[in-house]
Image (cartoon, rainbow, N blue to C red):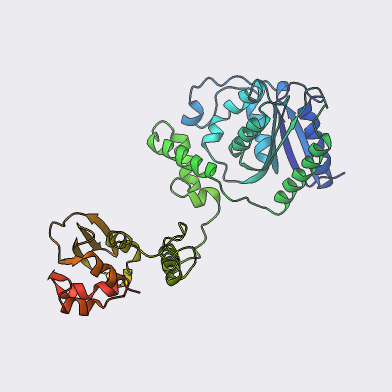
Length: 387
């Protein structure tokens, strides 16, 4: 059979050929062959790979000085159309063989490939840790220029003794088809928080340590990704579909429903004051004033910088003020340092005006409340907070 595509699976299990990890890869291989893929399985225990010494030469000079099989294996992963990282769980993590290989890949992890090809993460355990290990392997796929189209996990104590083997086989077939389709169609998956976290952290680290991480810095500059997340992921941000007006109308409706109850008209809410889920309109001047910032008409308040002070007496006895600036309003207890308008009113009078049970202009002319300051600003209250 002639194959059009090449997939490479890195197997961290020392049980080459008969272990559960190999058996799962065999499930993938069968379906991938039907999709026109050759799957090469690389057993890490057959490779001569030394431990990472933590010397940092790879991020300074651009390459590791140790001469062994690591570079050749990485070359196959980078050249493949799809990458699979597979490991059983050994004491809550990948095997020592897999971890040694990944540690030696630090230099590649600092320098994105500029490609986004599909990959899979595979892990099997005796029933403890396979999902964690698969998640870890899915994250490090990016080191080899790949992204995870999925994670394949299974539980099996002895060789081939899978729990729900038919389900594992079905899942393997599904993921193999997803992998093949992603390769053939050049598919990309949406970026995730992990991509953004990598770009922020590694990019920031390289910027701050460019003298030492010279090779990394030059690599990021060459790809044009040092200051552009869009370039890094190879995807652009679409324009927003909403508008400030849409949000403003939604917010006004939300506040109106809250003041008028759970969807009832204000009149119906007032007629049902005993319903605790339907509080109705404000029952006190203080409640009314506290709700005013949310009811501000921003268009009417544009360019306005003014402070209204209210000195309330009678059934309620308090002083508070509203400050309006840059299209927003804030309510604060107590007198203002320099109010532009001072309204002195009995509580029942101002409450009746706010409920439109009493005409404000007529109440002022008949002395039901008093005003000190700019009367023009007083007249503007209706436009600022009226409907």
